[in-house]
Length: 268
Image (cartoon, rainbow, N blue to C red):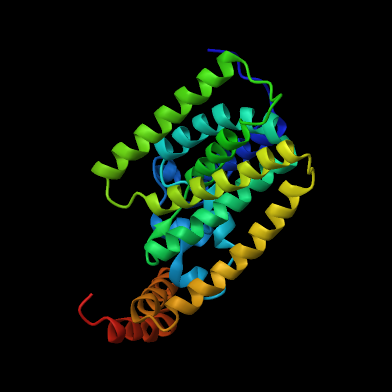
């Protein structure tokens, strides 16, 4: 295996993910180092349909820097280190960073479409996006990739996909919708680099990313419209907010919200 080469964007993304995990665990308590609670993750920005769709749009970005447990973080950061180095070389620092954020947002949107009441965290959606972009932009003529780097890419991909598929079978709650949303958007964004190289249109990837960002906003609006008025979403929203107030001992404010949740879903 070739030696890892320092890449500023990849290293910065890994550092942010690791530091944020440690901060979240420290704020909750020492026992949280293995797995922060869902309520703590919600406090720090997990993607959760009832909250995200009620105006907390920033959760579509913040969730991609949070992780549910130590193994979750370790696996994602290992794969990000492996594939991120290649992607950063392939499309440059700015393009790579844009792919991370845009595919992370696309993964979050896909998660809300298929699992609107699930609590979603993790960089894996964005990492799937980086895989997609790396493989499609790998068709660019003249892109220098050694046999060792290609082998690393396939090994990392195989390990990552296998682990996610196994976890998806044996562990309930794995967000495969986010994984597929990230992968599809990454394949699309990466292919714009291939088209730009083939037709000598240097501005195509940048324009494509702007259009993709606009499409993400429109997609969010469409999802909000589709799920508007859902009793299940509203009940979950009331429950989460009510429980948060209970934790702060604000019982007078919490009980009306919990009553509303029970009225909307009396048998849940």
